Image (cartoon, rainbow, N blue to C red; front, side):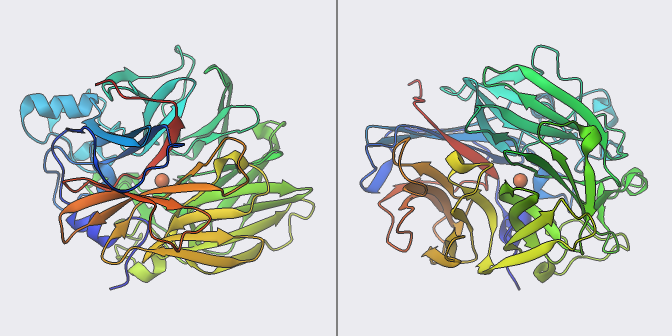
Length: 466
Ligand SMILES: [Fe+2]
């Protein structure tokens, strides 16, 4: 069976739940943790606290936030469930009460008036001195970065009118702004969306609403120095199906994706929609503008990468159709009718793309991702691909940390959790990002396995309380 990289079949179907919260003080380390690494790697993923419905999907799990705290060559680990209303309601009842992903029609009637969607399970994100667990259909949930205790939902002092804030925010390395958006921002499921910008200091300074051409998923987006890009994919809301107890989304193989592109200094009224040949964008690596050309680099598969959602006819997607290759799309804004240039990066089959985020929104050279066999590094200048092999292990999202704030692009480390299913354990690898083919400079060994965390980031200077 072809392994599926976005959420591979092992984790989608067989992932064991952790079901405990852990503190590991002074983790076992093989090798030497670089002294320059001081701060916290925050990650968030799904971990069902109670068994869910048969056939439920991994993205419906309860959010668990974890941190590896680095301090002078030592590493401490901690993980905590996000204390969402949903998690606490089931915990009080000691049983499952909520049904399928984004489908209230499958819930126990006793939870009809509770916040059933916010599992806070997708992205551990730090901005303006605060840590958040993000989930794309809900408000951010604030977490104490030193203890990982839950503070509560966050609405920017009441200014966030929309009901949803993306779990794929971008931090502008020049302005410090947090750029985000809302998908189905009023839960009408008619393609209503919103652009949000949060200042470096945490004030919501832009909130502009617009409508996509069809109610498809927009899981990730991109910002350049000059443009904002919203990719809307053909995984379409199926309210009738949900009412009948089925899935919230259905894949439509006859619907082409559309990309909304607007000038960054304009408004959503300036949005232009570009239809592209059928292919499915899962996650963005980076994007940048070169005059009227917008380059957009992402993991793109021939068909639906969320293979646990069936198509409109009820057919299951072949896993190979969800297998993504890192690909550059180039849009020519001077000619709306020009075909979009499509440049797959040679042999770069992978997902969970990241970059040296000091180069977010600008022309850049290096990108990273998880591959079938480990971690890949893409050099967009030479189109060469390097790989760090992890035999017998399954990699999660690799996160880049620069050696110093002013180090050259790509000079630093990749932090990557790998699962070792045969040992029922997980490790955190620290790999030299300029020499990823070499053995890790350090391996932090955990005495238990970790559920897949979807996304996270490293924040310098954070230490745990202990
Ligand atoms: Fe994601």
